[in-house]
Length: 545
Image (cartoon, rainbow, N blue to C red; front, side):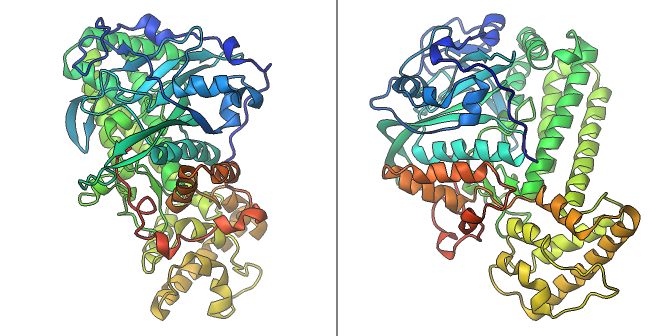
């Protein structure tokens, strides 16, 4: 699942970066220059500068993302880099702006939202002809900030920085993160909206993506019946991000929506494969490019539970729980279909595109499950095998990441006629995955499933010649050994808050190779400690940042 690195190019200095700001050049701008909170009508963006900060300090940068911009590591360690990506300096060619969008939040139309604490610096055109938008999150207020201050704190910024890169190296489509910088200022936040606000270190993260366009960018203009702006935005999106589809027009709009359905399905299937829970799948947090965007109260399944959500705001309803993510994505796509319908005036092709999502997701999920179990292909009978496994995983608290990784190490004795051995010896590789030793009847259910699994592997061996070693290689290329568990991120946050950034670098290095064994990092391959079960930041999180 390891992504391919970018091709080599000549290193540049920051001043040599070339900006080709297509969005601000081609789309209608907010005619009001004042940076005041308000409704912005008939415009796709507002020009706004980042807020100057007192004493910026570089916490970390991602060298792979710098390479996308043709920047060498030494350039990222300069004071100039820190000042620029804290928002204190602008490079020639930068045109800072915040975009207007709306969205459905927790199933309800929320009206205008927009980049309330994100400011796009501009689009870098690298030496490979790729456009990369640089976006500062936490760089100050914009016209879309509503009642907020436009700032961000270290804990949320560090989580976003690490998770963006962790997801990329897991092979999950995602926005990237270039840098994490402390501002030297304190920001007040009420972490759990409990009436107990506290001062926290402020920070700015620089996010990088080909585009940060969301479903909500289209929804707002359709909702306001600003169809001329909607048509301009769709046309620009096609030219900038989907040029292979051809000139704008109803047929191209449909082909575009079909592609968005496919890429969204692939992204969600990846989330389910690695046990990732986004936590806030509002339509304004859905990328038109099928990228994971906006890392807020996310989490990875630890105890396998399809009903788990990391978001305190969603704890009661569980709209964005792990097992519901495929359905929510479909619902969000339906809202995008409603938004672009006035440009097409035909509901049938839009409904057909939603069926493409269903089929694409199902195919991707089945392929992933086959690989997670080391099978050459997914057959109809495997639905029962997977359903039973998911039932067994919930009989006792079982760590999803550890279970699937260690399942590859079980000796299923495929070379023998019968499956023999004591319960303890057979299940030994899986013991690390259990938070408590399963009761005898639950162990028996697991053993029964392993017998079914063994029979399926024997069938795979007969039909396809898949050996035990081939199975293990296939599984370990699909099931990561290391993921960004919330307690690991919180430990890095606690240390960084005290000025120690070493754990941030440790995690960044660990998560670059999540499928590798990394014996020197074995201590990271562990269940959530008991002390972290209810600790703030280690289990449930809020949207506060």
